[in-house]
Length: 80
Image (cartoon, rainbow, N blue to C red; front, side, top):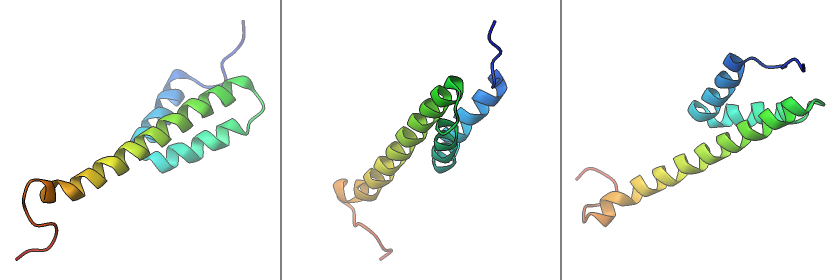
């Protein structure tokens, strides 16, 4: 039987960090992908993908929220 290098709790922590702090998740993913063992590489790839997807979604949502007032007929920026 092959012993796992990372516990379930550690994997959950990595994924949670990738969702809550995408930049940290991307860094963790890159670090894990540079390790030699296959488990680290696979976990690093998954954490990296989650971090990038969450970062892109956050940027898209922020971009959409910036244009939402203008699309709804309001003014875009400033208090008058």
